[in-house]
Image (spheres, rainbow, N blue to C red):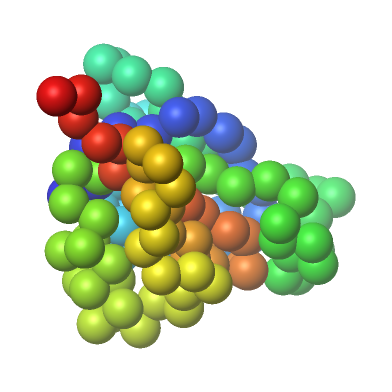
Length: 121
């Protein structure tokens, strides 16, 4: 289950291209919604903002330039759930020392990473 996020803003030609993915597929709660702009997340932590911007057109031509990082407490289950929902993955869950990372694409091609940190023993 996704338990948090690090914080970022993703602009789109049309907010409605992205909002259903982040809200309904990833399951992030809507904290604030105004015409053309939404803040996802809770008051307990950083938030992810999505918005319509007049200078953004079409899919992201350089999706590796920035990545949104979402924390999870069960990366295996979340990856399976998202793959079953048809989400495209760039990298399956891979262990890098003290963190598991999986990278996927949103509907406009932006990269999103799921992060599961190892617990200290």
